[in-house]
Each structure stands twice: as C-alpha cells, then as structure tokens.
Length: 255
Image 1 (cartoon, rainbow, N blue to C red):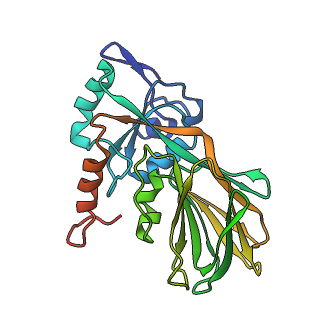
Image 2: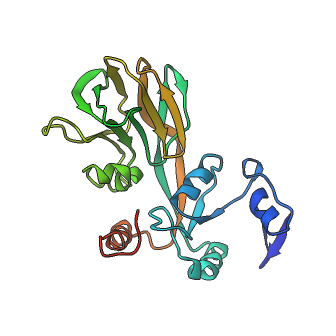
C-alpha cells in the first residue's frame, strides 16, 4: 500500500505491514529509491541480500556498526532524505564460489570453519595463483573493508577504511603464532583449499550456512555489485570510535 509522506510515496515490507495491519509488498518486489531498515546489523544484512537500493539503517539492535541513526533521529533523517541532504557510501561486496557455483554475495565476510568442536583443519591459501600460506586453524575469514570491523577484527585483523579496495584474509585461532592476517587487492582471486579433507562449514555474513565435505574448491574475489548505504555525516573514523567505545568491557552492549 502506497501512502503520501510530505509529497513522497512509501511502501511497507510485507511481513512488517502484516504486523501493523497494513497491506505491504514483498522485499524482493520493491522498486524504491531508498530502503529504510530498522533493527540491527543482522536485519541490514538480510535486507541487502535482496535490495540493491541505497539503504538507511536505523539502530534498534545492540551495537549497529552498519546503522546510521538511532531511533530518536528518524524524523530528522527522513527530512534530510527528502531534501536530498545525504551521500551514498558504496561498499565492496565479496563474491564467493564453491565448486564453480556462486553463493550469496557477502557485505561483511565469508567464513570457513571446522564443523567439529575443538578440531582444527589444515588450510592452503593462494592469491592470484601464488601460494600465500598454509596453516592449521579453526577456520579462515575472507572479509571486505566493511567486514574488517566485525568477525575479522575480533581475530586480530587490521581495520580497513571502506574507501580502500581490499580484502582481508584472517585465520581463526591458528596453531602457528606466525600466522597473521593478509590484506590483498580487491581484484585478487583468493583460493582456499582444505588439506586432508574433512567436514567444514561455510557461513556467509552470519546468515547462510553451507555444509562442506572439505573437498570443495573455494574462490573469493570482489563482487561486481556494491552495497549502498545512506550517510549523513560521512566520518568513518568518528563513527567507528563511538561504536568501539560502546563495545568496551564496561559497556552494557555486546557485539
């Protein structure tokens, strides 16, 4: 159902509309100039799986690294949207293929990890056909700059400015102390193989899980598609600092 908002039209996503007693439109069928997601980072990631429009994230979750405004700022945010007083921040997405079949693109990361508790796997990583490292670890993360502040950050990866076109390869709990994250050009082709094949799980953006026998051919590179975020302040470092402060041990919030 379309309604007027200060001369503009809006449409409500079907499940949300049903909860409000309204008529809605399925997310995949929406053709909108801007999408507004109210929730946490998980809500945004689920929305971006099917929406290519620029997205405004409203933080109704916990930490909200991907959100732009808090609930009490919605009114002003919509006024700024209608005035065109914003920028669009385009972020890299990660393309993942398994045995040649393309999986969902990731905004944050793709993670390959052991399917068994306390059982390491032996991984071989190559970049553009050149052997980069071999390691035993609980898993390996391939992350975008956006994802460098998520799971990859928690395992010791560098934080990558989203304007940098790069990907991060980060081991999870490696057995060898010398094993460290790599930052490679986004156009690189990253191949990861499980040596001595055993069961693993591939997880895309913490949303979609794919069981593996460990024999699969995995390949990663930058997607031709980007994730578009509405930005009002355009200050990555200030925003990051504020969110990291809220993530300190004395804070109530947990990431």
